[in-house]
Length: 311
Image 1: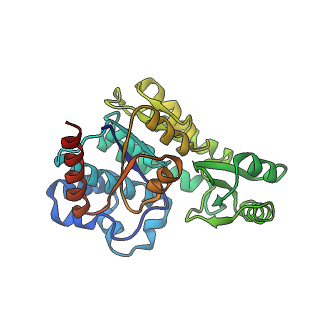
Image 2: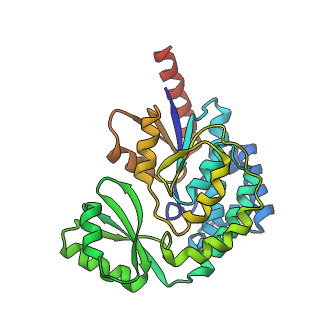
Image 3: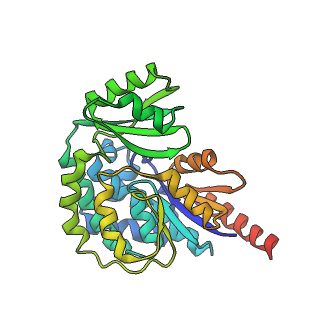
């Protein structure tokens, strides 16, 4: 049995996420408090009290990373350890912490800056939409010649995300439906993330990335930019800078994890977005989810059961 921890990205956040961890687990509460001290935001208040600010990029990213890592440490305390990790966009930072390549404290510091830079780089001028039921070839052909729209994410077979200027993304959505897309779904994002429009944001972030003391990953993690597994710290800075404006190859990350022998995927965080991608990408793997303290107990019991079956 080989286990991968998976982490969602911006858009998965919701009010009340991981509140039971904060209220009932001392380690989780300490992580929320640490994140609040480093970021300067009241992370618990943003996460739990129906704050609209939770959907603002500068708050979303640090809140989501905190919530996911708090749940991760509680799961690890139950004896569940990953053999690999991956995450979607922001989730790649959480995967880096889980892989031991970056400390939680440095991740909070970096992601707080990342959220501000990304919000300021394109304030409410962009948008993103998920395109369902269309191949990459057909999608690229359909949007060829349309200015200001780009391919952002390769999530799984039959689901690709487009990004760019708001009006261009809306127009592209109409064209794609005419050309055969089953559905085009606008996402909860106000920026043209993972497009060339964000290159300046990536460059601005780089000086903060260079201040981080990365260490060699203890386990491989999936890089969004390449869709391959990373095992050396020397690659990390470049990958994180270019990830801001590059396409996210989530499907390829999932396939690379499976090729490395991963047969058990555990998504940690609000919702089941990444789990859905795995289901549509792979067969004959087990997918588990951790969103509540009860989930931790159930997942730990299942992993123990699998280990005994294979012993």
